[in-house]
Length: 275
Ligand SMILES: [Zn+2]
Image 1: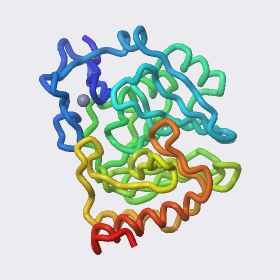
Image 2: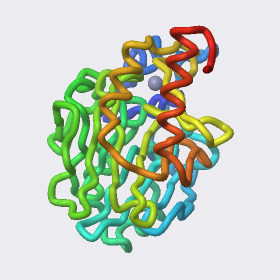
Image 3: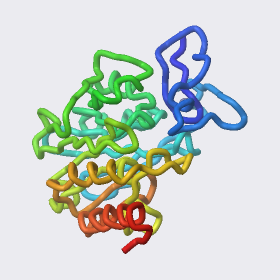
């Protein structure tokens, strides 16, 4: 039995004698099956061909990503809080160095993931660090490897229990019905940080965010959905925004940038102009 991993999205499936006939994540219209067809790998193979690398983004906040690129190519973020470490989003490659480094930091108290494209090998990480994985209930159907350590939450916000400093999860929806961001009031030197996955996608100029139903297939979201996302995020203050990809961050003025981004997206959809 082997827990096969889709090479395109990095999702690991429940152990089986052979790979599934297709990847359900990639067959969805938000993702894609490459023109060259479906391919599979395993965590053992990835540990030989890939390795993780790290960057400190701010005090208590680290990025972990994989080289060469594996799957979608997102990074995971590691938050250090007085109540324990939290892994935000996940990547397929969990190598020995990463285990040792996180163990030296004191392990993980929780993992939380923005949406199904980043579920990857979450069950491997949960078992390695013996911690729960917080997922939004509305995306439960996209879990390809069920496990007792997966903790489903519902509604639009929840604190990460047992973690002082009170990081909380906020369901914005949009890209996925359960699309979630993490609000960390103590982050960015106490100015407040929003860890946005690609529910809010930081743009290349690092001045705005954007919102899509499908990024690879260039399918936008309707104005009504973007308005709902804006309303759900409105109560939360933050100065920095950290996105899913390397360098995708707005290090100050993030709340203002996000507000302006909602305004210009809605203006373009509803009035055909950015202003
Ligand atoms: Zn896939």
